[in-house]
Image (cartoon, rainbow, N blue to C red; front, top):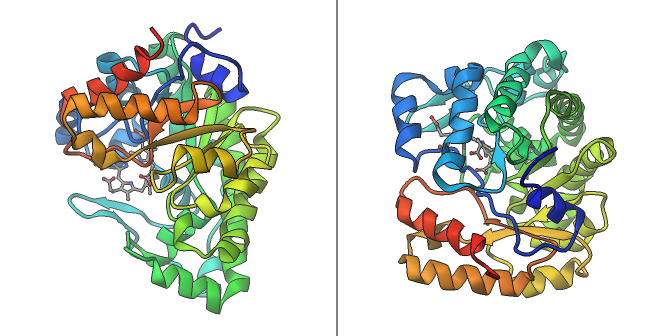
Length: 341
Ligand code: CP3
């Protein structure tokens, strides 16, 4: 079994001495050892080569000793497997040269055999499990169907995903067909990740907060909930919705094991909205890691006091930024590990 199971115990809501800690996007650009690999191999080569993906996954663990690792990969491997071309352009981000804009485009999107199309991900999981040696759990992940649709339709990142929203509101039949295809692929994909050895999965709804509360139900949450329902008996599921505080009470009533929250909601309000009945994960403002380490330490303590040490997983409210000094990450992780000692 896993030696440090603090993260899994927090997901079950068990009483712990201190909360576990990991950081969204912890395998990334703030680490010099990551940058060294990035200089040699392009993005999808890193994702597709199990030796590289597993090495990048454990880099932050070696340096800081987080309580969980998250597999190095990307949410956009799903549209790629569904026959939608995805490029990762340096200094630009994801670029999809043939975005999905019409009903005919949606018809051309396939639900692939994930064991074939995403075989390299499952191999990367097996390689990572070897490196981790059961010291800590490994988290697998997928984007929410809505967040994946955002990239498929927009064709690139966006401040407001206006084209993706316009597609949903003017052609809801095609939008729901696409969302269902993404959902079906994601369920099969996460089930295979479980077979390959991940110990928990997280759904990233990075752009859920772009929707109004009622549109969120229609275009995002119902699909996330299908994934939760399909996986709940196999593995703990964490649902993270950026800017989705308005949906917290509904999320807390689902069969997810934990809900991720961003920094626009206070610990107190997040606990009230979820009736203190589910594990919460978050919610340090990633930009606050730019504050001096002594301030980071104080704020981390206040955050844990605010959420309470039980039914809680310390994390950022979104991914770590590339310009965060290494000692500041150290201050963040150490203040959690020394809480209560
Ligand atoms: O958390 C981890 O460390 C595991 C790896 C991981 C990556 N992407 C690696 C990555 C995870 C969990 C993701 C998820 C992801 N990818 C999300 C959801 C989380 C979030 O941040 O909202 C989204 C929206 C994407 C799509 C994506 N991938 C974008 C918008 C970009 C470009 C912007 C950026 O963050 O650099 C990527 C590229 C990407 N994915 C990088 C990494 C480390 C950086 C580019 C590179 O390494 O060459």
